[in-house]
Length: 309
Image (cartoon, rainbow, N blue to C red; front, side, top):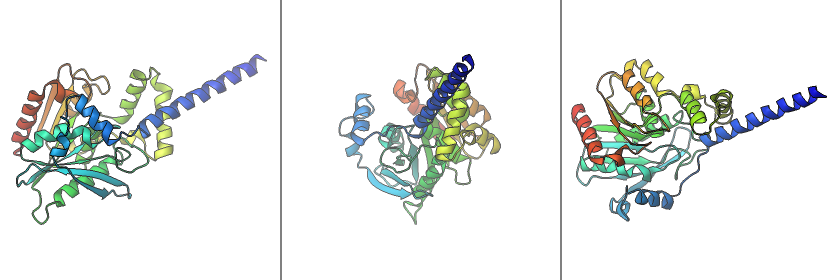
């Protein structure tokens, strides 16, 4: 009898592990979508937007078809004067384009236009799953092409990419391709998706990384067709000979517990050529700008000056 009880216990434990891992894969692939009103309300409550400010910026909406037919929706913000510079801004995991308008202000003040879009499976864009940079890097490349073509035949001379969290990792992945932006600002990126998922399973869910993280990655592959192993900005930078041709500024909060600042330090060490690293004491995930807006602006402007942009 004990044999059957033991076997039953093992099967129940295996089922519980599989179900928990399936749930973890769902948290990655299917983040809750925010609506426009909710996103703007949060930005106002956090002090990032003033009531009615977004409307005064006169966003020009548009949409673009990604390589697989997914509809990507964006808006363009113009700096109010003729310019040959534009920055594409990519938001973080589960967010939407309104959440990165706070960064756009810095570029608008410098004479850049800004192109801000909803990543796939976020905001008003289409897409069945969030793939943590695997497909998003190709979406960003499409946005960079769009930015370069917007004012054709007088094309933009400088097209940069500024991303936060997942958006930062996506910008780094896109920079390692043959359609790289002219510069990248990566605010709190992860270095390697497999390592990041294992860390978050332990730190956020209080579960052992093994076997839950590998099983969750397996379910992600079965459901969305990609391997977490294939998403590694750190490895891509190393393979791209240190990404020496693209200037990169890394920014990270030292109090970030979601993606520790060690990730940006590792990426910075792997990067060759023009680069910068700015750590913000006391800043949590995605809060470096809020923690010290004056220093953030100085660091960004100094980096762009160094690049000649």
